[in-house]
Image 1 (tube, helix red, strand yellow):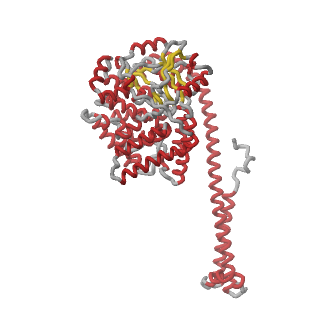
Image 2 (tube, helix red, strand yellow):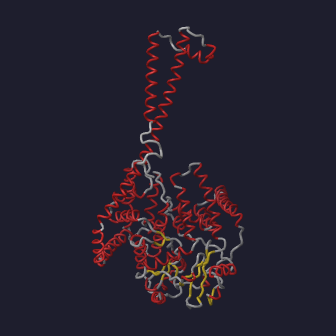
Image 3 (tube, one colour):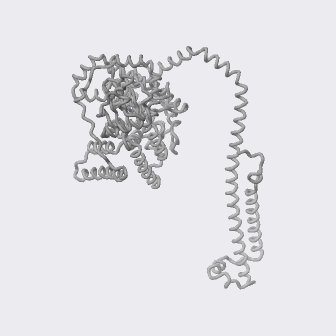
Length: 609
């Protein structure tokens, strides 16, 4: 711990922006949470009516509309920003400036008063904050809709830390917003709007976001895992002070550095000052871009645990082109099968094997639409070939040759053919978009495909070296596995037998239901034939004047009976014989399909539950 802390201290750069240059965090206004529904409804009504008014006056432009949407989402808070990001990442506007800005949007908010924050810290630590911190800055240096972060110094450890505290009522507001969103989803499902979007899966994803982002113990665990995975790499993660981390409070090392978002803003405002800072701290942006690229891919494909919220506001520039990441509110991992498919998909793109990439892309879909997949494959291959050509054109802006641009083109095909959305890949797709946003600022001329091929080549070398280094232990494991093979085969056989019995029960149950359906159909048909036979018998009696039945049948049935053409006695006998035969056949089939083949339910000893 001490060694790592000293390394970051040695990499502390000079100050990029003075504190006086930062806008102050506004104080929070007290809003009643009881009327949250009306507040959300009012915000959306103001947005839609405002856009409609601008359209009527002829002053509505795309830039104004997008700016109004951004401000509305920032006022509504985290859940609505997450929903908007989930939608934009599957839309055709993914690679537009609005889409990139929305995906990099942070839920900034007002700061709660220090007295309320002090009460929360005291409840979480079971003691006054003065016993833990000898200095605590009352004004936070950042505030979001669910948390705010203060700079403080621990009394015992004598270390400067960043104290992240959950804002009062944040969880209640999120629950109310989630309830409102679920009501909207019910309406959309009722009217069958965009059924392929898998609304229930989106709601489950939002519930997971609440569990992960409103309980800081999850973020603490994610930071610990990232810190262990990145222990020998030029990407640093702040160390935690676990004894001060609780469900609503996070205490981590305060890293002195320059936020990438601040550097981007300064370079637009004062490029000479930004370039002087780079020279003074020996920072090569191209090297930073390459390191960031490879570290993100290593997190995904080698560690299977990645920072899902690595936007420019969570990346810190250090001396000698080192970087640090903070605020791991969203971390992700994939199932082994999905991870391998994603890896093969991107490797196929890097090597130009676009037909293989299309096949893997189909495997990643939850449900394929009933369309000609060959036509879809041709369009995807055409998109990837054009993207490959654009990547190698150095004069093109990076936004027009990034992975995000390519995904936006693929989204057009996905929407055209109505592929089902897969919300479980949201965090990984956000990681790719955040990476592209950072690369746009760090190294616009970076060749994505070249770096992708380089990563896979270096990854193969690391895997080979790891296999050689662990060859003795792997050999021992192989010998043990060979010795246990007969026992494993026996267990596998028993498992397969149980699965086959279960599958047989499912098939038997399905067959029994189908037999009951067919039996009911034959029963209805036999009843219909019986009624028709009785009607013909009455018609026969009326035609041969054997019985006066007109008063009994009524005018309607009597009229129908008189419409049947007269027939001889022999023809009537043949007709009745045929109907009786058909009735007997239907009754026989009804009994056949309705017969219990395996005994009564619950009495068959061969059936397992």
